[in-house]
Length: 330
Image 1: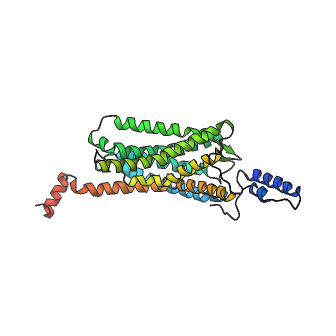
Image 2: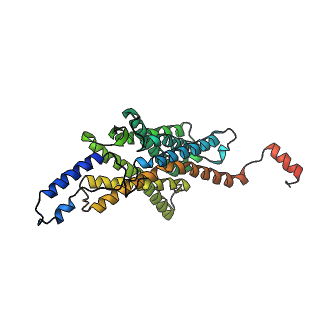
Image 3: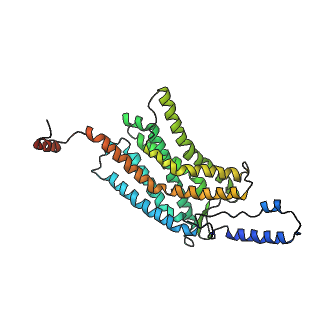
């Protein structure tokens, strides 16, 4: 992570240096008796950059851990000996693990410390895959919570496949704004939204707010309402919903940043702007960590399902004969 006392230069370092030079020349032209109270408030505001060149080890470590843990969980899920019958929505768990692995692979491309070796098409692909997988995971968890009981009771051939394809397609469409708004600057993969692409910034922020904020709140509200009224099965709000904790700050802070940029919310002090910029970096770092936590959540879900269903699983003929020999069956 970056050091707030000695921040590493970023993409805006040249712009800030020019602003400081102009500001110094501006102050030198005024008389010493001039009241600088209002003028100082308009001075260039320097924010503490947490995710800069020095944060490259964080990106690499998160990527390596995410790939290893997601790969291990996927290997366990796809083994022929895996008891798939213990969990009705086993395919959703596999898709969540795939989404986490895809995000982990693209994390190094988004790192601030990798420069000089990136091309624009790779930057577009990194944002498309990373945010597409994140949106897909959120929609899959929401689908699991809302349609899980119905899919388990009455399985329609091809229904799960159609739902999965539709959710991944919607996730890809939602990730198009940030994909088009990304570019390479000085060899770094950044999100610019410059010029005519500025409107895409607000579309992306609205998508993040809807998927990462409104979706989990809607699930909790529907569960509480149905439970209070006693009408129909409640949405499955289980341990998988912990996933939203890693992306909830991202959706909230991006919404606030969009309000500030659109002048709907005015930031009057430099301290408030610095706090918002720091929150943006912290939210991004927490969102990156989801690729490490997601496979662990999937493993916990599977473990709980196996522990719950073990007493009710039918014994095979071999297991039954062994129990007879040991005198364990009455």
